[in-house]
Length: 316
Ligand SMILES: NC(=O)c1ccc[n+]([C@@H]2O[C@H](COP(=O)([O-])OP(=O)(O)OC[C@H]3O[C@@H](n4cnc5c(N)ncnc54)[C@H](OP(=O)(O)O)[C@@H]3O)[C@@H](O)[C@H]2O)c1
Image (cartoon, rainbow, N blue to C red; front, top):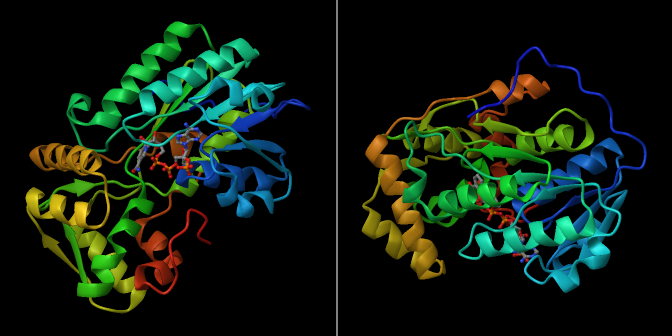
């Protein structure tokens, strides 16, 4: 559901002294949002669970890195002190529901004025949220947030383009992108595009009670994705359709915890059952964000797809 109106293209600028906190700041979308604040020269507070992983964030201008755990409210008192708005992100693991509901309670006690919930929405037409653990948790967290009385906004991006970095070992070893998707299309989005929208939502007013859905600009088969990666790295990469069981074994061999591997099997089975994605660029258009194509994303990250540069959450 998109609660936006296309004529609303100008947003009042951020008031002086508004304190913004981004949680999950060491992760993919969180670090991209923090970098977007630094790029604009807008001060921001960044919550990390592991301060040892936060050197890149600390080096950015205007970023106040704080240490705490969203599951442990006693670690959040000074982190939340004086905060007006939060971009709430945590990992898509089994603890996401408890983590974010605990955090919402702590934010209410601390007098936070607005939570922007980082959620998700698959690009597949008719996707049943009950079929995937994270989608179910997001719905439960949203209900909790809406009932809490805290002013809210929800961001609902599709699959991140950055998840294709997890396929790099196969691509480098065998020249194959191996996924159990047949000729299903997906419309993945660059986290940098989401970060631009998050920046606008956090620094301007008029977003209360709105849900912003976003996908990338192309509905791609995995053969298309492989071709874009191949063009970017200058080597053959082809798509190989594998069974769910093969992919589940590969995920477990790659070190995914078994519950994560089986949640992903369910996600991919639901995608393959329905088969077709719709592109939704209304949020990009609403905020004047140029959509990044998968081809551009692959070119920008060619060294990662070649296996020449390790993927960290802060690629160039
Ligand atoms: N992956 C996708 O394609 C996709 C698409 C749409 C929406 N989403 C949603 O986006 C969100 C983030 O996705 P992700 O899991 O892929 O991101 P991620 O890169 O793993 O980032 C999540 C961050 O949250 C931090 N975190 C987790 N639990 C925490 C806690 N208790 N206290 C403080 N920080 C905590 C993690 O810290 P550590 O670094 O210490 O682990 C990590 O840095 C999820 O809600 C997911 O459902 C994902």
